[in-house]
Image (cartoon, rainbow, N blue to C red):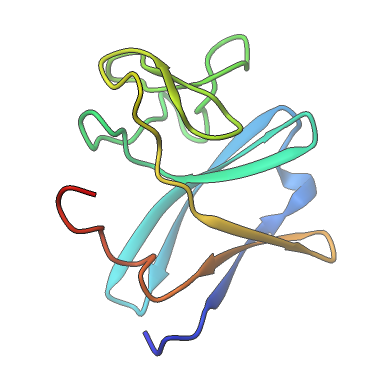
Length: 128
């Protein structure tokens, strides 16, 4: 990357129900794929890497299904950990106290964009 933020169109905002979730895979620089999902609840949007802080596994239990049955929390399909949609904080499960890794979004003219800064495409150093 060249140090300048890049934007990737994801979908029309209306394509994500409220409440609802939708997963995406975005090619960065043609070399790396960023797996992420968007959460929409009570008009608020958030996006996170699709990776459980406990195992690194994808969270969804069916395509685009990241919420628990009540659509209250993001739920990991592997071990049932529950995360708050607004900030990705784990409230139940083996990773309590840890959080999902957020990614930046932008909304313009009814479209949702992933905003990628140079470090977003890289994993943080160990210990962070």
